[in-house]
Image 1 (cartoon, rainbow, N blue to C red):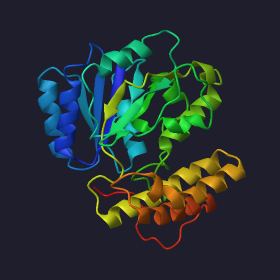
Image 2 (cartoon, rainbow, N blue to C red):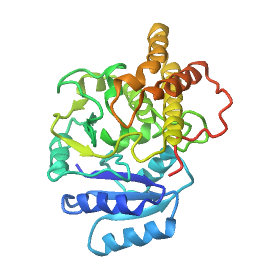
Image 3 (cartoon, one colour):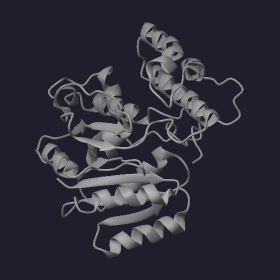
Image 4 (spheres, rainbow, N blue to C red):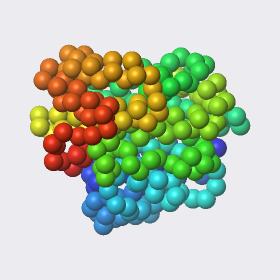
Length: 293
């Protein structure tokens, strides 16, 4: 089974080069990379041409802003045919041997979808269930976008990412697009509950944390936007009311439960964002996008 790596970028050329450097020696014949530029389009095209000129199967495309729109555009830009798609950020890095490990999981004839771990400078972003654990609407949150693996045919059948969700979307709901994708896949393919492939904990990609490199104001705007998006998806997919209210209240503890760069004062914007998502409306915040750089 060929792999398709789909990357949306605002034009951060340094991290993007590091990502391509990590992938270049690991790709197998038939694997392909699509880079969707939503900023610095000419510079991204030049960078992609450099790697393509060395024989890497990488192509450049462009789209308007929005991570979900970019990913959908990137899947469409991949070479025709069935493959398993995955969605690294432009600052993701694939440690040596990771692509072989992904192939070991997806090359089975019965593979439909799976998940693997993403790390940041502090360690694993989430803890995945043990291999063999059934996928359900509660543990699905352990898989974030960089760790999704899905057959292209299933991705296309469910309409790809919801472009109203995720970073850069034209709505206040700035995260949880990956969870929404997996929940819709589970609804369409009920057997995915038992056939979902949880990869071992030692298979992971590296990246940066949510607040890395941001000012306090930028970080708190991002956390509020992320809280809104998560709570919105909980409502759309009809999670139990008690669970949604508990999740909203727990936002106040976000600054206590998470290490630096998160601080104790970050709990309040997370709580407000989750409340906004729960109610389906926002309270006077002029800038809704989670990040602009």
